[in-house]
Figure 1: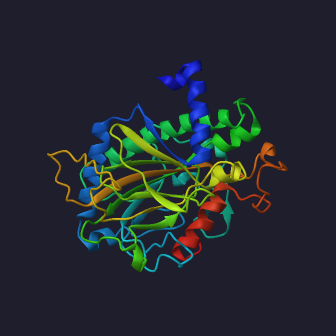
Figure 2: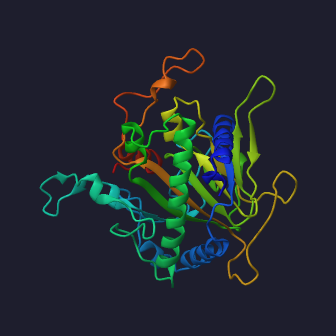
Figure 3: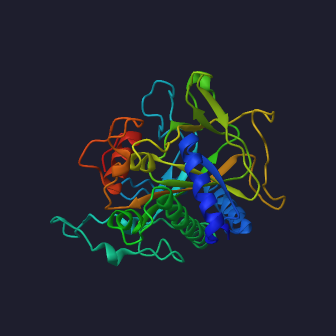
Length: 356
């Protein structure tokens, strides 16, 4: 409601600008997504991860579409290998609006075709329609995940409009803005961090290694259990430190990814973050487990992320106002700028070791 009021919307845009410059993380409350739906999708995720291993492995990860199941130890989100020595301990299952990946193989293998973008609009009320996704043998999984992803998709459209206002792209007919916000791509990722597989940072073992997200905004809901941490770089006043990002009742956690940093020549942060499982319930690791008493979930940590990207064929690089400014860093992004699709597959290769 506040975002539709011109006066309060202006305040929100200013707060968004400050949060993206300082942290790259912020909370969104009164987001319009039903709490009952959030809890139901956690229960659905728990049932999925409780399936026999053979059943989960029958839905193998397909990197070209970014769908399917990935078990523990497979993906390494910290690609440098200097801090993380083993793969992420989390399990994960992905669904995507992959019909927006427009370069597709022809059935006869003769080449590629590029469908017209205007023919590929995603219906927010049925976001996965027309996309290739696995259908786990879990009652209501497709219905619940589609409902949650659709609600998050609508929220992302609002977040994008606020971002563009903060960047001065107020004309909805501006070609640059149109390409960025037309047909955003999303990845729904359900994650389980098993309570009996704790992290050990001293040994390079993490629930999720230190990484920046690849797209524009990430919309994250958590079950209240601790683990998420954000890196605050060293300054003249303090050393580099990791800050916990606690759950806040009724709120979602939002962070900006690489594409927003690229768009602003790093004026806005793509914040480095990680997940450390097994923290204590002290002041340094706020604990607010919101799992309903009726839930059959175990004591593991569950979270669901909606990773969003700008338009799949949009080339994302610094806007003119962020170039050749004395108080901004020199441009570090190579030209020609990558499209969302190109950057997405580049990062997939970096994290899995396979080209797509």
